[in-house]
View (cartoon, each protein chain N blue to C red):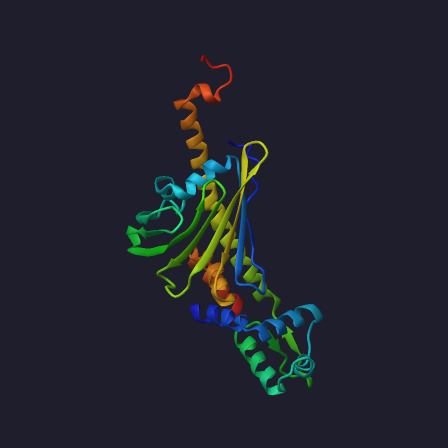
Length: 162
Length: 123
């Protein structure tokens, strides 16, 4: 599909609230996009880049269920556990879950994702992550630097030193 | 590096300091006295907040001028914008993987049940 009409992901971080909102549209109906979020065999195929191996250890995608997986990059001996609970699963409409990872075990994010049907068999998802403090929110944003971390930090160093 | 980064985060985690930064962004350079005026705290307390912001590289104060106005270092905020953009790009990469998966799933479904999706198929 070279002429996809899908607009790119947008991110909103309200300065004064510990919240990140993410919006994205897909050329697929809500049922398909929803399934890719709750079916573990599908989920592992897109959650991480190819260089990362995602091993699901717990996956009970129903209201009151739990999840846990380990993401690893064997060549670098890197391994990180992620876990949480499925607070509410409303088929094809809404997923509410918690999210924690070993890098910041005291931090927990409450994540609400809605799946909205659009015309032409398309779908819009809106995900809202709420954390305890603005500091944690900013750390989440900065964690986006993890890949390409060296050149990013080098530039940051230069700027902050200037 | 990590220290510098957490200093920026720590500096902006405080509501008074965020307010100081917001006012400097809106009104431009200001003296400590002018910055402290709206708050119900001592000049020393505001100076302390400004010192934290200064150590994080978020504001600077000219060394020579008598009034030593506080200046917002806007490029640090460009960095925040860059972090958000980097975060967005990673999410976009993740969702492009999902795009490809959805396309493959849809193609697989059509080949399994061609008559439910293909116009003019034999029934």
